[in-house]
Image (cartoon, rainbow, N blue to C red; front, side, top):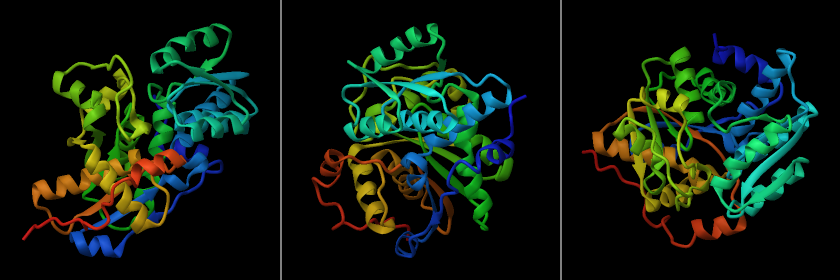
Amino acid sequence: MEDSIAVVHKRIKDYIIRTPIFESSFLNELLGQKIFFKLESLQKVGAFKARGAINTLLKLKEQGILPREVVAFSSGNHAQGVAWAAKTMGVKATILMDQNSSSLKQQATKSYGANLVITKDRNESEARVQEFTDAGAYFIHPYANPNVIAGQGTACYEALLDIKDDIDAIFVPCGGGGLSSGTFLAAKELSSTSKLIACEPLNANDAAQSLRDGKIFRFPNSPSTIADGVKTLSIAEITFSYLKQFDNFLELTEDEIIYWTQWLIHLLKVNIEPSAALAMAGAFKWLKANKLKNQNILIIISAGNNSREKHKEIWAKDYLSFPPKLNLS
């Protein structure tokens, strides 16, 4: 039997930050909703990934099998999460990142003391894990691991404990599906009537294609999207099983993602990655399509690690001159 999210939260709570819930009165009034933002951009390593990584190592320690070394592949935030967790637990870490991954995230990963291996592409990163596991390292998969999934779910768990209102819908960005799956588990423990909606870039829609086809779709190479935190090649069987149970799954264009990245940075006054803005882009699309008013909505802001180059890309075009409008009347 897997641990409940409550048990997992108790295990990791002294190692992580209980990130705050923000609201924007301007946005609430503009859209006629009450929107709560769980700011994992203010988490250790600037992303929710710290939760799953530290839970995995703490669970292994409880079982008396804490490894001497771990290995992981990542586009960036999982790399930092594993590197930080390994340093915290006194474990060596080797991280495989492809050459096109964020230079900021590469440097941050090295700053936690990890051995960083740069590969040609994501396929090579995934393939080379085997050589390190053969040498005795424990592989921490970014999402195909129940302990990682449960750790990620503590973000939603905390939010549901801290928000006093009943939540009508929970929106979460989806890459490999680890955060989405953990959010599903947390919601089932604390808010089973909330609708669950995952959000993915149209340009990197392996999960959406998988759900439509009824079988896992895999990109041959990393897709092109500004949301670099969700550029996975495919979801996993375990996350697929959870995503099938979501109430809705939305695909967002690059313009929609950038639009809400700009607006959330402006309104919340914190750094937000395009990957994290997916959830708000999806919420806006859902509200508009269903002509809904007076909804209590939880948005999981997954991360906030933007490089200088990413900031330039985000702000290349001005979207702040065009306030969001639902036109529900």
